[in-house]
Amino acid sequence: MKKRISMLCILAIVTGFGYASAEDSSMSFFLTSQGPGNGADLGGLAGGDAHCQALAESVGAGGKTWRAYLSSAGADGEPAVNARDRIGTGPWSNANGVQVASDVADLHSDNNDLSKENSISESGDVINGRGDKPNRHDILSGSNLNGTAYADGQDHTCRNWTYSGADGSAQVGHHDRTGGGANPTSWNSAHGSRGCGQSNLRGTGGDGLFYCFAAD
Image 1 (tube, rainbow, N blue to C red):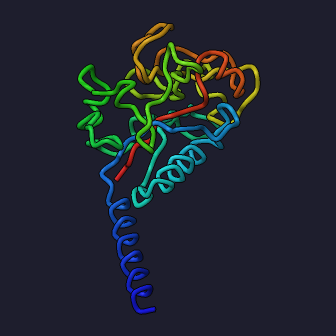
Image 2 (cartoon, rainbow, N blue to C red):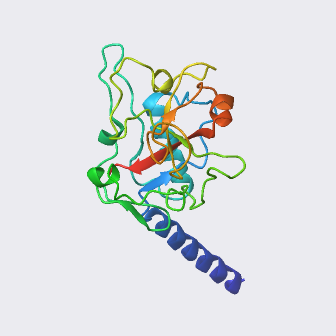
């Protein structure tokens, strides 16, 4: 009986250390393994942030404040929001400890280390890219190349991430840095999607995924 109790105590201690280690994770960047499942309707910026937070918590990294890399247009008296202004100051590292960018300027420069191999999920998994089945390389951002919101009066965010109809469009990047569009090698602003629904996003090489950054 004493031996059984001792073994249970040891197990509890080991489990406790494992949980603490996970909570101390240095991960500060990931690409969502899955989207909320309703196309580009994420529940607005707050919904995108909540999804990032939930995925981070699922792997023991919920002790940080996570933000979705998404821009939104000015509407209903509210100003536009730039993705680059939401994500903290860096540096940011993935689940494997690889630093993908040192700061905001580096992130939006040609020197960042974002790639299919480095833009991995919260669990450290590589996300399908062009040439894989299914292709999931279109990543929602709603942003210009420099991480700012569009100011041309056109909808690039599927109504500020609240719409999942067959029409509309969201600006996407390519996490594998290849494909079509005006900027095919861009991680955050390659082209617009053809529609805002889940099936529309999948039909053009996406799955409603987006980038998450630890803002603190």
